[in-house]
Structure formats: structure tokens, C-alpha cells
Image (cartoon, rainbow, N blue to C red; front, top):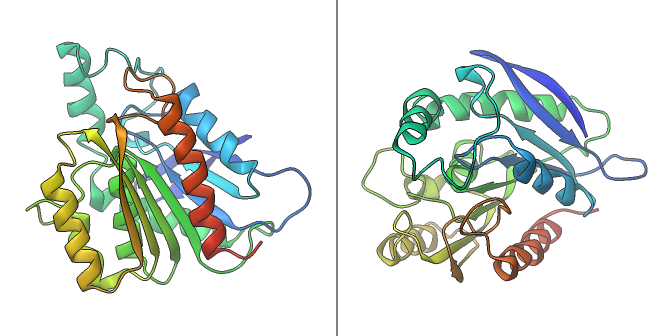
Amino acid sequence: MSELGIETRDGTCRSFVYRPAGGGPWPAVLVYMDGIGIRPAMLAVGERLATYGYLVLLPDLFYRSGPYAPMDARTVFSDPAQRKVLMEKFLALATPANVMSDTAAFIGWLAAQPDVRPGPISTTGYCLGGFMSLTAAGTFPERVAAAASYHGGRLATDAPESPHRLAPRMQARVYVAGAVEDQTFTDEMKQRLERALSEAGVEHTIETYPARHGFVLSDTLAYDPAAAERHWRTLPALLDATTAH
């Protein structure tokens, strides 16, 4: 793993790059972190994903808020003081518009790397990042060939920035894994997303795991080993189906 800064419209985004063993060039995957930020459990996702033969870029979407210590995934949402800081200092600046502006820089950085295979990239994301992964697919349709969302929230709402509204622009193959217990992605939202993707002719799969919101990241109270391993089967399957190694 190497840590570096990527220049964006608003500053320098701390980012982490994971390369597979051996020589490239490799297909690239842009990983959008969850709403708890960069910490060992999130970095572990990038590290493992690279072992499947992908160069992984994991940016810190909270860079606008300045340096921060790793947050405690077990208490950050349940403790009012921690939640207030998270919402007002960090999430308030990680808006879809800001993150998509950053994404243009991330895609540009990847395209400039000699060990990244030319052509479209793939994206995946968790919680907040699942939202951003689908948004990227609709914002950069010619640059994103596959987009995954794991326990992503607010994927199909009445909000103007809801990712399902971008379905007519998407060219990527889409995979969405929701959770049984998740008020941020209810059955009604799943049906709305399914309808939008189908009507737009987007190749897609939407599944519901028998788990709670946050099941992939190992430091959350909702971590579910079986669901996390299912994620490690479905994600490489999606990437391999859209990328020639």
C-alpha cells in the first residue's frame, strides 16, 4: 500500500493505492469509503481487493474537514456528541456534488498511471460509498464499466441527487446488495431502484442479504462474516465479468 495526495478542485485528497503482486498493467477499481471514514477496517478492504488482480484507489472523502483520528465504528452513531461531529464536520462536506468533482480527479489520476490498464474503471462503495458508486456510474457513464453498492443508503429517494435518477445515463453493469434490516434502503426504495434501472435498460442485479446495514466492515456492530464473504464472492464476479485481465 502507498499513501499519496491527489489534487482536486478543493485541495489535496489523501488517498491509498493498493497494487497486486507482480507486474501490471492492471484494471482499476475506485473504492468509495463508508460514512465512518478511513480506518483499519476500511483499508483492509482495499488491501484484499488488490489480491484479486486489481489496482485499487481508496480516497479519503473527508479530506475537506482536515486530518482526523480513526473513528470508532461501534459508537460514532450511537453517541450524540460523536454523531454531531460526524454529521456537521465531515458528512456535510462530502456531498454528491463535491465527491463527483473529486471523482473526476480520481479518474484522471488513474488514467495517468502507467500500471493501470487503459479504458473504463470499476467502482464499489459501502454505505455512503454505495451511493457514490452508483452516482459515479451515472455521472461518468463512459468511464465506469461496473458499479457496486454494498449496504448503500438513499439509493432511490425523492431527493434531486438520488442515484436512481441517473439510471438513463448509466452504461455500467450494476450490482446492489442491500440488507434485511436497513431503514436507509427499504423495500420500497429497492423496488424504485429496480424499476428505474430496468426502464433504462441497465444490466443489473439487486439482492438483499440476511444481515444488517454495515455488514461488510469488520469493526461495525453490524459486521456479518457470512454476508461479508458473500460480498467477496459477488464483487470479484462483477469485476471479472466486465474487465479483461
